[in-house]
Image 1 (cartoon, rainbow, N blue to C red):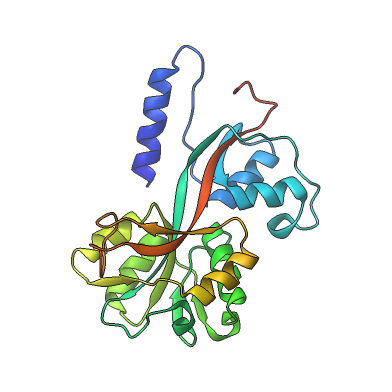
Image 2: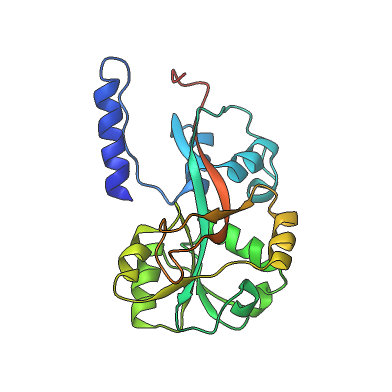
Length: 228
């Protein structure tokens, strides 16, 4: 992921070398990106639509903070998939089967943690899961060493670290049931169910369509910047 960001910035700078210069700044993800733009540190950043909504209205993630109206949506960057992953030999087949299990949900403060908690709360198992706060890369490494673990990670449609892991360890993408999808959809209104096409993501039944939740990522500049 870091290499792709650096390469993207390199290509953008080559294209706009006479007008703009971009720098790839490391961060903890979409929520931190938004906070740093709100603080004036970033002129432009990427984030997710739900993070933008909460910042714009001063709710949810940004509850109690002044609504941040000094931004606009510059571009749609693509959809991310909520990947709930277990070993292919695991008996886990639905989201509700995660009750009582230890699950890696991302680093503290990341959008992955917020999404995972909201999803688990929506289906009534938040108080029944044991959360582990690892990055997707670290989660994949721990998964290989400790196969009792499960993971929730954003991908497009699959996290690169899990693509690598799947080459040596059979994994399963957990699909939500219709009932789970309905409950989650009522709470996480920015998400929608869509089928991952055959052969677009690894794991069990990769040659068939598999349903997953998607949500959008966007590029957002601060209007105070010269970026139009």
